Length: 370
Image 1: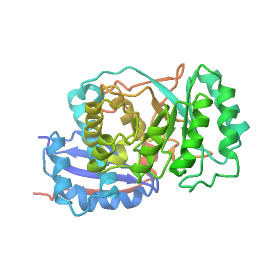
Image 2 (image 1 turned 90 degrees about the vertical axis):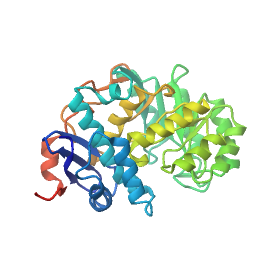
Image 3 (image 1 turned 120 degrees about the vertical axis):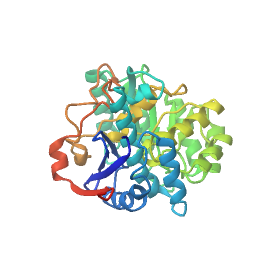
């Protein structure tokens, strides 16, 4: 009755939604990871869907393991990005069948989450960034903010000369002492430069230093972690569970930041959360856009015992992320006093916008007619 009859994708360049349908006609919605979503959709139909059609849709752990084993020669990022579409659709299906939000399926409950306003911009002056973050503080009640330093994978070359040294004190002092301050270097610094910047961050009251060094060099990140008293964080890019275990065992970071979609869905992300819990490390996931990734992260944070202090909530609108406009009906990310509510409807508790689906490229994998 709960056998998977079909898997459909609705895709543009940035977003790929997945619909699972059972033989009894029950449905669930998920999403693959964003960016190059058209490529991920091809992988989904070729290397994920064939292994799960006809199987029990409620046995999520078996299905994820089956795809991993059948496609063991392709363990990389794209397989995980595609696998996320299956995983998240199955969790939504299970929630709709049981009449429960995913957070309850995971052992948690709906509620409010403190959010940090997450800036994605580097092409912005220190003064302009300070102005817009202060406005969000005053108008929407945020008491935590993240902004960008360094240049992405910049090898110690800033976005423009002196930007990091200017933006850190300018934004920090404008926001004042009663807010949490976070910065993200996106793999931009060498250890020596990261430590110097980190000491400036500490002096300016910044408590979270994200991905200071190239994320693939865990030993470099650990040098920074060991040298500083603020929280050094990372992990958003990582999908390999062995890498996660090494990162946690060596305590390369103080806070881990798995991304549900990069990881391959909720099940694999929960494994990372469990590793971190065993080591006494908090989890503050990466959720840097307003597609389904942030909804999934809200449900995750409502359930895990070692959740971090806040949810990452992008503040970028159509000028920066035009593709994320109009994905859902209503506003699942409404902010009240710097907090958001975990959706309490069945599954993810959201509805995909039908007009977006009508414009999307469509593909279908299904069981052959008997």
